[in-house]
Length: 352
Image 1 (cartoon, rainbow, N blue to C red):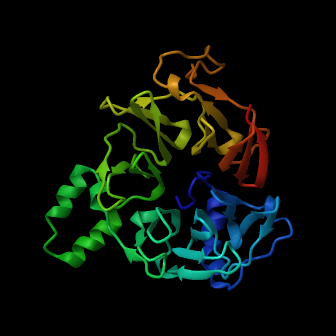
Image 2 (tube, rainbow, N blue to C red):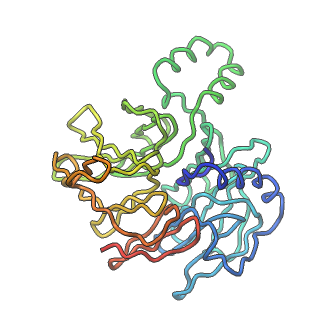
């Protein structure tokens, strides 16, 4: 599916996909009076707070107020990355826009509506080197701040059977690239933690890179649904990886183990993002689902009492009443509160 973090099937997805090309063809973002109540899909919090969403909406927090910026496209933005005063936002029609002055002015660095594929995430390692990735294996890299973006095809994320098949046709480079582009799954999220790049995607895709995504090592896991986020944590001397995905699936793995461990959430709605700040960890989901995660307890066998459906939730998870019914796509945690972006705009959620 096309929306990063939004795993709501049906009307929402259909509407955005059918409108994507028409919206991006228009030349200016829509200045919406109720922009803070529109669908917002990602938030970046570093030296500044930047939020992106549908119809070219990009907001920045200035002097305590949220201000909508003028952007030269109406495409839906799915993700944002910031380095200092520089901002990159990506979205539908393989669009990348950038600002080098904190959002005062913008340029379109890349836009390819003919591909009919969205970027779903973007990550910059410094103000020159970054990657953008998305549906059907879409993967582009820049080493000059976005002046040029170069396409990459990463067969190493695929299952062994697919790699072996591709090896048999490598002599025909054009056919090889065509087949690889067809086989590659959606890349939903990329995270940089502890010197490693982590990739989460469609069809049970989890992969790790030690060289900023130049090559990948696929993780073996007995799960074939989509993952929407993956992150790593240090517990004592052990590295713990958590991956969240469709239908409430949450998996964990320690670097001292070979197998992934299923963490019971007792929910069937999709999980979208990890929120990590001030030694607190949360996982957000559709239908207002919000969990606090006790990382140190993830691998214990302690569970809560059986619920009405006979499910025993992991004791490492604490369900928080978010007070909203919409998909919570991402958030920032500060002072006991989550500043969240959702399918119906910005929400302030009590996280204690």
